[in-house]
Image (cartoon, rainbow, N blue to C red; front, side, top):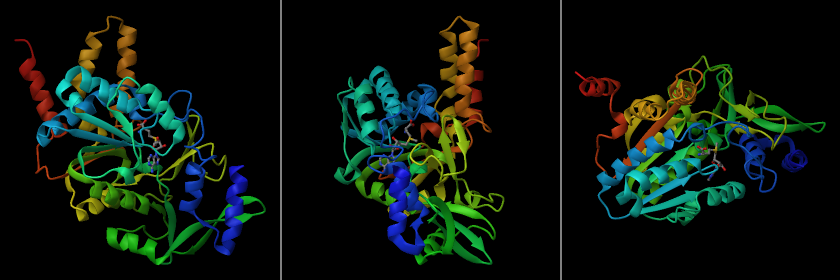
Length: 382
Ligand SMILES: C[S@@+](CC[C@H](N)C(=O)[O-])C[C@H]1O[C@@H](n2cnc3c(N)ncnc32)[C@H](O)[C@@H]1O
């Protein structure tokens, strides 16, 4: 169905076919057949991939601590959290449960607003979050003068990207055309807009390499900055600063498809039945935010962020609650995924925090690993 729809769109465009971003937009967000728009499992064991919030509720618990400190810094009676791209609502549930349990003052001031493109996910979120009356849904366009914090986990990697290649010093755009009913790629000289994207970034792909770029990420950051009157933006996602994202060794870019917990690099198969993502350019988010008045306050790997917020202490607390060595081991293995550098989510996943009208506070998450070790030494029995 989706395959036929996209082929018809390509035919309507003539020789130039569709930009990869338009192709990806349809694969993921076609109103009826797009991957995120269908009624189906996407996240967790029965789905196609795990996210940090689906791994364990510790992720949301620790994020709630950072949010509680932000509430204190803002020192205002009301506190709006806008979560965009909330999936099935697990992160929201973990944050809200933790704030209700441990930070009743923050919970009482809370307006938790979800911006979610997928009707299926909105239904799942409403079901999961039914007990929390402070939750509402809105579009980004409906929000104005937000005072509080924008949060997102793995939102930006789901925005459509353009794909480019550099040959003989010239930048080319990958476009999707038809060959006898199949999707194939064809290179066209890159448009001025795509070339300007790299000019303004100050970094570009090297000779012979393929890479992605996501102008939608910049548009989104600009929009968020305009809506935020005072407060913070926390963006968690896998990605790199531009110099690393477009480094010479990254020959084929970072585009990846996910289906039933396996990955592949072919976005032209199983259209609408697999997720398509690309790593996030954090320099682009930081630069766009800075131009719109957002001050970068923190950028680091997810493992540092979680350690700073008390990951180790929380792990020890949870372990102490179980007497079963098997269960304790399973807990350690599960939580390891959130912080291990190579195969896990600890290193590739980054956290960017920007602020407006908040000064340059020392955020809880920036507590250094040395400070964590010192706190254990101080607590150790004599
Ligand atoms: C990979 S999932 C991440 C889910 C969730 N944050 C988690 O940690 O489990 C991406 C989410 O972003 C949503 N999404 C994608 N583009 C969006 C947009 N422009 N506005 C709002 N939600 C969007 C998808 O429907 C989905 O809920």
